[in-house]
Image 1 (spheres, rainbow, N blue to C red):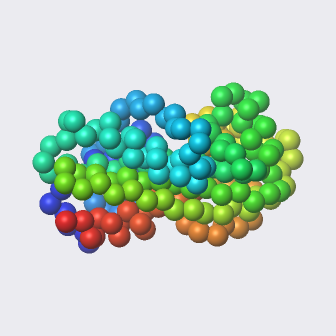
Image 2: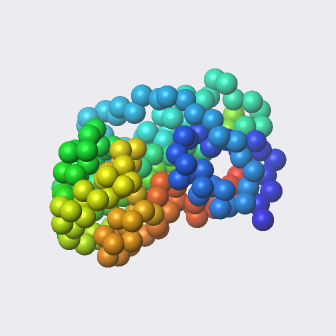
Image 3: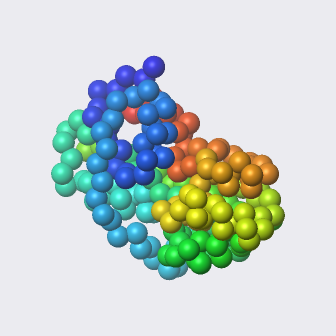
Length: 191
């Protein structure tokens, strides 16, 4: 069991991230701010998630109390040397999943942890092997699960993960949006 003399704040609206942090059996609050999620176009794709996590944390800096510890996170899906963001429409979601179908892609989740004295950020990478999905399966998933708030237009913890993910190399929780094993390690060593 982890005991910290900090007011842990998960700065995320994501119910998946909230569920994952609850799994660590620690007390925390949830706060969120709308943060601009743009990034410099020259930034390497592999650095975008960590950059955005840090940017989200910085949005909380001015209002922090002395015992606050902010945790932010961002997830990107990378395939064909491009980032698949959240889909803008049903058609866009279909196109994204079709592009992932029968192929391997990477999911990178960046995390930033910040108090008034220290800021650290890191990321974790998981390789996802997708099975071949037909149009009917893709349409069913989009209609039933409406993955418009998810990078790459899918949630591994949903139906599509059950039927469409052949294997992963790395952390399942990184694909869900928060590498809790690394967050726990950092919290244990926080001083």
